[in-house]
Image (cartoon, rainbow, N blue to C red):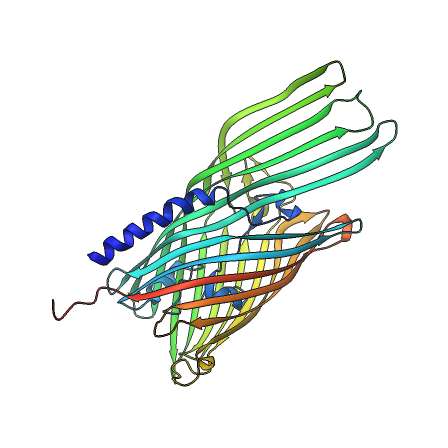
Length: 426
């Protein structure tokens, strides 16, 4: 009971500021975050991020696999895990006209995982879902009007708190579910200023979407034991068009000013109009080959039907179906080596290719990345420090679009402890 009291006290101290921080956390500077729900965050964190993000079938007893709730039962019966992570992104955006550099460093996620009994396990935590963060200015010379400045800027994030359960109804088969609470606010603003003349009205439009509600995601994993401590694991996840309560606010105004007078007129004002956003059908499948304590190779396919998503009773322009392919591996030379720390390190690498949910003039925005990293075991402990890096490219210069060359550095800490050990002596 003492450990439970300590844990819940610690969880309360962590959850409260992190929930508040999630409302203001921002992890992107990409101009592509102007559209849809912004930059969608990956479904893989921690250990498997360095493996191309391929994790739907991963079933390792010393990791928290947030990609598939069925994986929660992989933890040992006395195990307890707490994990958190940070990320830094360094990007260069360029088109045929100009370029810019941007850096974003932020807290990313935390989660915990433990078994309730021999057949039931649970997990809970907080992860990012999407981020908006951009500031784009475009100058234009218009005949008989002069210099016009178009300014587009936005900020915000959506976060996902979850509580999950997983059971093993039969040997080597696990099924799980996450109850997700999605919440957050996205602000998108645009302004037009006529710099060469005071005879035209300047325009401002300020939009705000606040979203909150519960959704459900399901997962399954099945293991096929092979000879010599080897096995094949097959996994799948699904989420069937969850609907979230959303509030839309809009303020559109025009103004004109001179040395002697000013005029401000509100063209449209909507305050917290309630509606729904219907998210897409989501499906993912993966396969994993495992040689115990030595090798793991994963491959994933992930799909979201964003072309059918409904935003406030209508389809959102520029959205299409998302498809992602990922493959990765982990190799440990000798997990139980006494003499060599280097042999106990987990070495990881992978790659991903994503056809994103954004499309402009029939040009879908693609994302290709290469990942690599290490899992550093903590001395005399089952805890691990995971370091992962990703380098990649998103977008294209065709049709005056933007190429994003990026490098991402992830740091996560997995704290592993043994709980519920019955004492022989008091």
